[in-house]
Image (cartoon, rainbow, N blue to C red; front, side):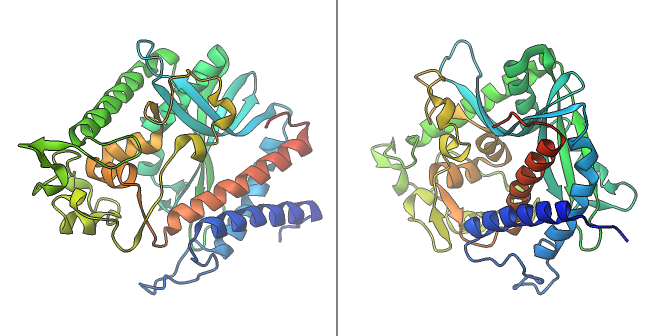
Amino acid sequence: MVSVTNETTKLLEAALAAATDCWLANSNGALFDEAFDPESGKPEIRNFTTMVEMLFNYIEERRGFLQSRDFQLLSIEQPFAVPLDPDRPGLTYVGRLDKKFHYKGAIYAAEHKTTTLYKKDGFFRSDFIDSFSPSSQIDGYLYALHLLHGRKAKAVWVDAALVHGSVHNGFRFISVDRAFEQLAGWVWETRFWVSMIESQREALGASPQGGSNFEHQDGIAVQDLPYMPSFPKNTEQCTMYGNCTYIDLCKMWSNPEAWETPPGFTVSHWSPFDELDLASIKKSMDPTADETTCYDNTRISCFRRCNRMYYYRHVRDLLSESDRRALLFGSAWHAAMDVVWRTLARKGKDFHGS
């Protein structure tokens, strides 16, 4: 039987408190300790008990690494804003590194990920492991890490954690390394997707904050057309990872510009400056950089998956009011990780990060 020290108990309690606070702040009433899905009746593995078991095992698994002499935690949830195009000064790629640390002479970023893709031998299915190379999100973080630290930048370590009904000790670092020169393709592709987003906005006549006042043809307003002449649907993605949040809207509306906010949705604007806590570094950015020229992985990946999804989420600002349990659990896990890494790093040595 594993002996639980008072130190471990206190850390576990602090991490659980952070996870619970995060869950309650974003859950719209969804219960953290729900044992069964209220709609399907199936066991719900993303619950409080699972979180407790995972956190205890994670603390024991990572303690040696986070307190080793070779490890120094540099920052937690560090926002960044880096240029994307020297010929367009205001165009900026923004994000937030979950953790940044110094290890054996190099600088790394850590990105926490949870998954239910279980494999008996090795915990994680190969399709999950392979999904990070190539990965637009990870390549973007590597791009930022190289710009911030030059030759000292080494890799992004995906800190994977398995969410399972009975297996609670599945953890793995997945290292993704790229030389700066190898990221040229990512830069070009990101500029391409930005140009596509902007062209679709222009076709709609949409302002950066959403809405449209564009007259399409013969003086006919967009909302009066039988279809919307921008942001086409990608129907191959409608049921790819379970039903898309907006699938019913696409079934009902040929032209969503003609309709107001539907029941079951709320208006919630995604603002990278606010969501990524960029206020502290906004002053150091190009003065022309704002919401219209500031892009992050959330926006770009959404557009790449489906243009119409992007329209609903980032032009109309529609957010589902339903229980988004996977997102809630992942966010709660991130909050707990902040406590675990900060505490264990300080136990090992002084932590000089933010």
